[in-house]
Figure 1: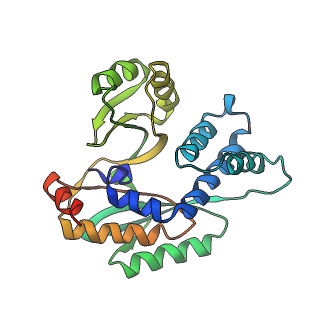
Figure 2: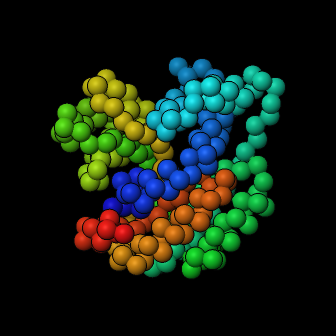
Length: 252
């Protein structure tokens, strides 16, 4: 299991999401507002907004909340939406590289939240650029495994749409593209009748660090603390969990 997948295939991440539905909703709404502000409320011409809305719907955000967020972000309600993206770098236990992406209207609060979570959980902040070189910006489309869709089906659908590779993540597949090819690959999947869970530009590690069970538990605890902050939108890491370690974690 790779850290860059944001742990979507593990029960640890699912448990975090389930226990913090309100926080999850708030972050998804923020993404919708920013997408609408950047590209307008018309989803036919704003693929980023399409993805943000779909992700919110799949997480059961009420449609009324989604519609209000679109209008608010696009300036149709007279409200002002002003968020800044900040990327923090650091090292988690085991020397695992971290990129912590914040979307905030208060830089000081975001910085304080991240530093406190890192310090209290055995992690260290890093200078800008000292970690980022371990990651490349890629388009990542996540697809849940079903009996109806095989890896070959996905490959056939996206091969001519700019996809670089299809990776088996256990509980699902990931289609990796250049960010500029993300919309084309997503559209190709839709044309083939293949449903996807999320379609986003992410930071994908180019080198991975295998971790043992105890280190993985410490990393999950750190992620837990970081995600307590409403300003933290995404966390990317370069750790891999071997199958035997994953089996041990599944017994926790």
